[in-house]
Amino acid sequence: MKIFGISASASNSSSNFYLLKAIENLVSGKDEMQIFEGLQNFDLFSPVRLEKGVPKNIKNFKQQILTADLIIISTPEYTHNIPAALKNILEWCTASGEFAEKAVLPITFTPNEPRGEYAMTSLLQSLQTMKAKIETQLPLYKTDMEILEQQIMLPEEMQEIIETAIGLYQ
Image 1 (cartoon, helix red, strand yellow):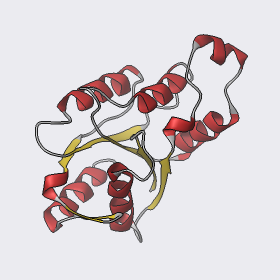
Image 2: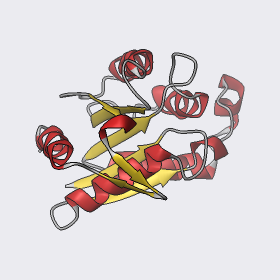
Image 3: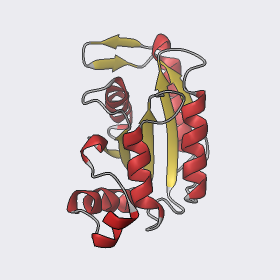
């Protein structure tokens, strides 16, 4: 299975990126996974910009979505919502339909419970509007994992939860 991971954080080298790297290590040998980081580099969506044409970097991103079997979106929660950078790319993909019938595993990765609940609700609403296929969702917390410098160690029970969630899409 070809997996495309999206780190929805507005900062480079975020813990969401390192969570996706840990998932990539977990599925290596079974699945192919590519991780995208850099949503903050996309032009701000507007209907006027869309009329002028989709920028090349956004076209490339959309193509990666289309060729993936599963999209994993890992997002923090910013002011009880998803980051603006994630919302922006979802706006670029709404009318063109890249997420329609696409398997998506939404993950919120926040410091501790109950943080992430509002972000998950917002993300699910956007994905459902775009007709994405969502089999499950994962609220994950940093307090449940060992985080070393630029590396996240997934405990065995967390590995099983993630593998089970990914397995729902196969």
